[in-house]
Length: 238
Length: 356
Image (cartoon, rainbow over all chains, first blue to last red; front, side, top):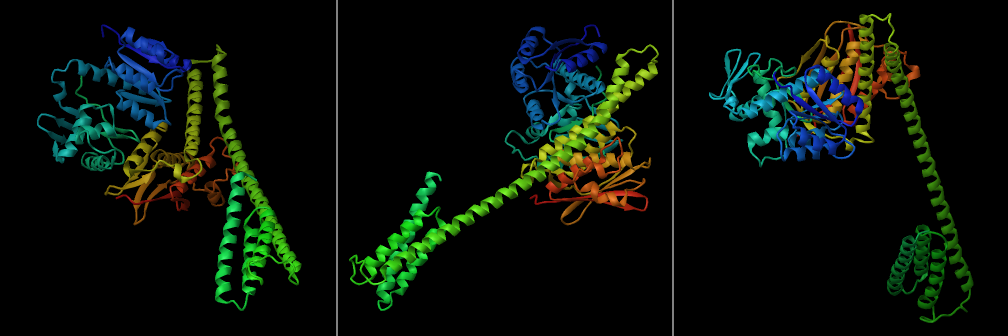
């Protein structure tokens, strides 16, 4: 790594901010810490961070509105830090353009993993050269997007067109949590209702085809009340 | 007495008097030879008015009205007031008396029933207060234990004791971590209680796929207890039932954690899901020491009475389970515990509900 990644931490709780910053520094990232939303916005504009870590519960402004503002001029990855009680906040943050979230309290390894994933995704966006068509591969599962073929341990798996669309969308965003609404709009189009039942049933069927035991999945994980997350692809080199 | 009330009483009185006068005219013309009926109708109206209005004045007013109207309309000479009829003062007194007695009785009745209601409310309040106090006592006891170990370990670390080896230091840090993890678990349980608030209407019920909830709970428990081994069995068909996902997850986590930490056994525990016509049934089965028979009902009855539990000094098992019961009750389900030959089993029923 010739230039270190710069991470902006927007968090009003000083203890937590210093703990996050310590972890990140010891892992070779450069950090800037600000303690309020207004400072955060100006730092995001002036410092051009590679990643923003954003606490949703800020004293001076709603974290969600910060995402909205940043998204008007930057596609810099935003990872939301939130308390477990606010599922709806997480969903709206993700739908507004946050890339991922961690739930308080979180461990160092979890945070670092999320940051790596987000950095990889932002890289992929920047160097758009057909990387999207690179096949997904994790454990025994391979998805060839050009041939629309899914194989599990070398046996081909047959999906309905809808099921394939869901799996392909999750696989193209592997490692990231995708909200129910985002998946539904991508698969069924923008006029689909809010009722997630149809997606859940399709997901249950997909799991029956690719997971050995649907109750302890290896590939597609549930984030209760938020959405789904697919195991990170192994072929991504960074 | 507030104004609209008075207005309502007045309207009521006038309405009854009008109805009864109309009725009297009809009776008077249908059966002219017997006008006792008329007097009885007026007495009835008097009782009705005294009974359903506040205070005496409407009753007295109605009595006065009745006497005059009866005199004016229904006694000879018709449509003339004549107070010289023999016995007339007696009729008048009788009517006033009826009105007064009825009004008095009624007001006393109203007063008494309001006193009773007030007393009942106070009793319910006291009961709730007692529950809350018990819960708080149990919680503070349970929170103090991990806090003691956290503060103790932190103090030792802060003192920078030169005799402290790296290994000991790591051990102390691990104690701090364990303690705080336990506190987090506790806080999550308490949060669940606030989500339920008072009734099942405040639950966020959504149709959820059973296996998703199961897998997420198991995943979270394995994050906390990495060497937990849990054997899961779920039915082949897709089961979707209405529930508050976060709460049911909390229940499963509590049950699994209890099975892992209190069974004193290293055998894998079973989490088996099956279903019948109306319910989805979750079984959490461990192969350990089982539960003390006398404690089974106590564990689940939600009284939070810590003093009667054999104090398993570290983990407040009682709170976790009564929270489970509260959650399941709010879902219209049931949770029971039994001992089997080689351990304990918790069975939880959740209604399938109508999902179209």
